[in-house]
Image (cartoon, rainbow, N blue to C red; front, side, top):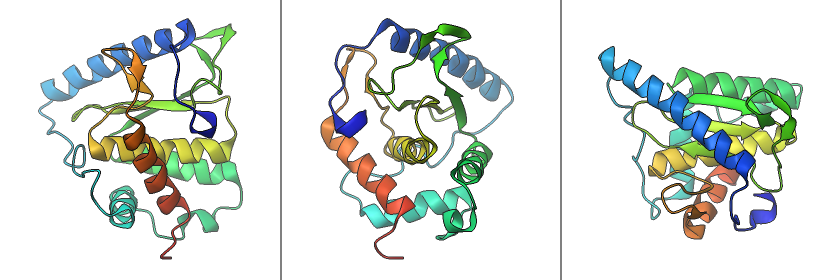
Length: 185
């Protein structure tokens, strides 16, 4: 969320978007298992107590990106495209949309959520609110990748419809910041 505000009660637009993505994820999971694919080893591979820099490097290595990858891009759009392609190449589905499905009258509110992740060892899915600016979308993607590495979904607890664990959110923010602007680079 914007300024790390805890998420409130999810709007119908967010709930419907999550439900659409869950259906997409369920279909892909079933398809991948039917095809004999193996679970993705990086899902649930770190803990909250792990070193942030090590986690960020691990994610960057899995994506096949060099430490200075973003500096080589000339625009935010190109950097976002490079990041998106790297994420998709690991087997993670990534969806960008700023509206509910195809309904242009139902815009997604960036102040409610910037993105979310649906954790799954076969078919993880990251959703990015396309209404946000490109730089924020990049941060959102890496934040959601950290959720995957932890093995914990983001935005809110889908079962109880409650805000996500704030400690997890802080960890994911710190990993994203380290990934994008490393203090050790």
